[in-house]
View 1 (cartoon, rainbow, N blue to C red):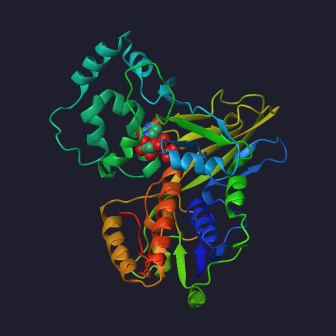
View 2 (view 1 turned 30 degrees about the vertical axis):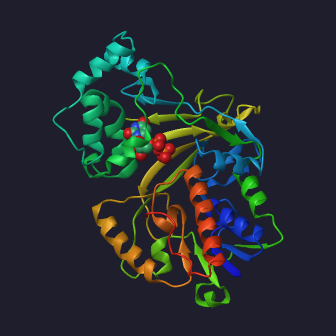
View 3 (view 1 turned 90 degrees about the horizontal axis):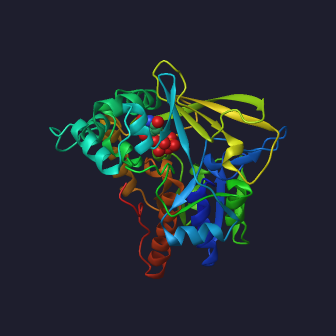
Length: 380
Ligand code: UDP
């Protein structure tokens, strides 16, 4: 069969590869002049530092299939992500752990004592947390929440945390030990030659043709037996019912000599600091040495027409609109929607790859059984 794929990020590339390996003809289109989507990396010509062009991407997973998949296409270097946060003129460790708790409260509690202490702080009147703020108050109480979550979340999402889904907080652990690794997953790594080289490797197959700087030919999609859409779900429908909203990021570059931050990422929890965090990209490659350094301050704002979409907002109004698009997508023939933009979800890279592999399996099974290919292989 002949497939047309919109988007050369992880979703599009992984599906392209699986289909090509099964003997199909695949045409991949991307409007950008590079592959890898928002995971794109490139060397800074002045310092030689590998820059994560659209913000920090740390690969972490517990999924064996995904881990062995990504390792086929490049060398993954062990990397343990650590994040610090500055609030009220002091610096603390994230995710919230025993040292963070002891520093904030001026205590020297051991794990069991800290557990009991935080349990006293927690708001037990909240049974089913309905939003980010309630989720935080139920599990950590007011003081930790106000210090580390309220301001940062307000800036990141541009909304009161009472309007943000509780699931966003579930991304972050609360630890009663001094472990300060940002992620819990057993595999944590960053590709030695960057993500773009990995995605180029995935797409490097005789059955795949990649066209960069070229939008997917929506008007001529009958050229393909089936299309895979990893672009914005609503864009497929010409935004017919309205725009699904995203947060976008503005990056402000800082160049210096030596070490600017002393760590890969410093968050800023105070509401009056206009940016959310600073990332120093050479710390994402601790196996490299560079004299100069490049950092980026991140400013979050509502994406407007022409801005790069980063985080799907998914508030109640967006979800109502999303339901309309999902219903329309289920009726749309000969297309499958995948990925962060195609399903309008906040996805990590490993989940994106896992879902792309599942979608490719599903597509190949449907072909084997001569059944129609489903528009979704996940519960969007
Ligand atoms: N968050 C926060 N304070 C922090 C870091 C994160 O309140 O110092 C909240 C914020 O709402 C953020 C969410 O936790 O959107 C998830 O954080 P994560 O670090 O996973 O965000 P990402 O790196 O994906 O932007």
